[in-house]
Image 1 (cartoon, helix red, strand yellow):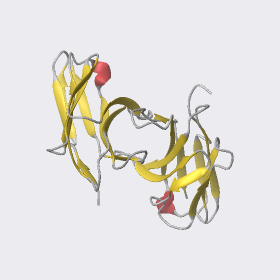
Image 2 (cartoon, one colour):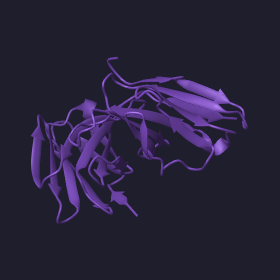
Image 3 (cartoon, chains in turn orange, brown):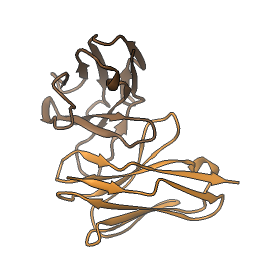
Image 4 (cartoon, chains in turn brown, red):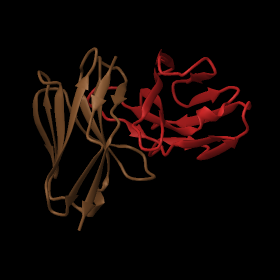
Length: 110
Length: 114
């Protein structure tokens, strides 16, 4: 079986830093992705990690530790528009489909 | 096109009727995926195609669900003899096919079975 665990909800204030964790148990592993989804919208791609370490894209960074089956999304200088649901997703094999987690709802307060 | 287009945007159907949901992926995208998403949950995998070949249909709930992509572009997800439990948001996504490319999702079809 395959499972991904994320916290269900995280709150923070504008300008703060927040980390959303994801642990996974899959039959194979070929990369961890993160997606953002605003209420009423479609999921949009944020980042992809195939190798251990930190990938930085502007205010967002994503980290992967394959030995720990763990990753996180780090959001810096939070803005109100960052309020959304964030999903981690794992690809179990080369070229295979993504399996999504249940999502973390981030609420940013002024 | 510029994005992934799904139609209809909303579909209300009576229990027992068949429905066909359409997905028009980004031009040139090799891979096309169908997901179902319940409110407050992550997308749940249904099936996917590379070009016209269906690579994996392990997520289709039962044999009332089928999908095709006959010319490697537009795809149709068909649900026969719909049941109330089929009510959900059905999302299509496409990608270039490489592992480091993300998915581009469409706006989805909200299916309601009454």
